Length: 206
Image (cartoon, rainbow, N blue to C red):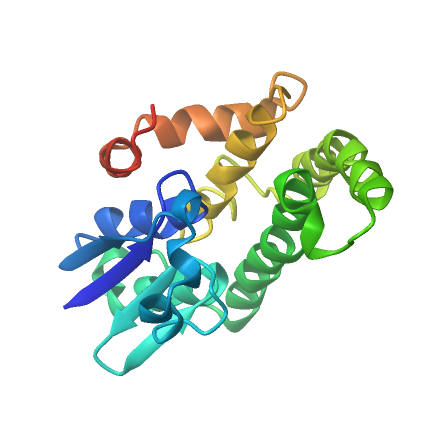
């Protein structure tokens, strides 16, 4: 049995979607960021980073979305969501690394600027860069990193739930996917999948 530790509206949505997509047997445990529950001793014992998501497996705890998503896909091979060749697998890791280290960080500078600077002026400057940085990221994805209807081409993979978060991160800063037709088409295709709808409901989202 897997246990997904998540906070509603957080990037844990990607793992939540994928777990439903592969038909995994799992439990979910809400750790509300709004109340600071991710810093409570009980959760720090699970993930010392104090971040979400985390996935409890029979072998131990996995953290960080790229690792969690790849693990879920690898543990459910019949779903066919893990790329077949070594090169394709590296491409999947590369895309997820970009989403994690660049796009998500650009978004996080909005509400989490205090992670990187104590000076209010510096925080304000970072916050002012969120919208242009997210637009730059969307352009990079649109023009260079998306490879077809889905993130890696013609077939849905474990990268797609993570890519789906880009539109939500942008919407949180009043940015539209309209100038990015490939990303918009992808977002709409994701919304048509039952697993996405189930996970969105669990997060209290639409």
